[in-house]
Amino acid sequence: MSQGIKSNTGTRLKNIENAGKNIAKKTINDYKAFAIKGNIMDMAIGVVIGSAFTNIVNTLVSSVITPFLSVLTNRVDLSTLFISLTGGSFESMDAAKKAGAIIVNYGALLNSIINFFLVSFSLFIVFSYMNKLKKQNTKVEEEVAEETTKECQYCFSKIPIQATRCAFCTSDLKKSYKNKTNLNESDIVVE
Image 1 (cartoon, helix red, strand yellow):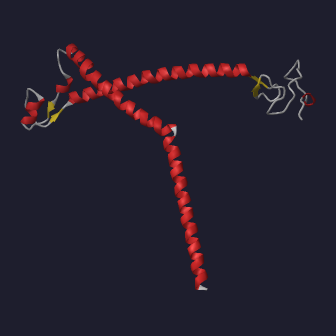
Image 2: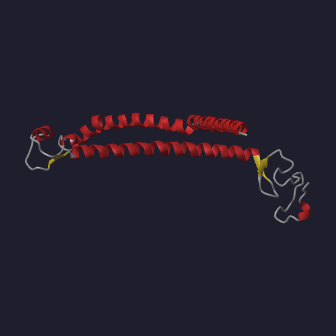
């Protein structure tokens, strides 16, 4: 009797182990399918392009826009603007830091705000252009679909132009009716 129990227990354990392996394999395969799908790859590409785009915008702000604003504001460099919270007047931010003053560098905040608006405006332009292209492609696809399909006069489903019988209501489309709105049940051929 105890030999039979040990044999059944061993078999059950092997079945549980095999089931666990199958679940693990299925999970790994599902993860591979998920990771290789376009969603993850698109997101990874977006992150890389986004970081490169951020570098471009930061360079644009620090090398082009900030100097231009400096000329317009009587040569004030935004990155050097600060307020000392401990009182006192300092020639530069470095002098205030050396003196141990607590400072608020609001010039850096202004640069960050400019960066934000430039990035958001640039993204707006890119997405507007992408939506415009998408709308154009959708129009072309609709025109192609309209040229290759017609509407069933009985069930109003879209079917191929060459169809002689509707795939949805199985009506015979060879018959033509003068008044499509006043059809009788006997006019519809269903086989």
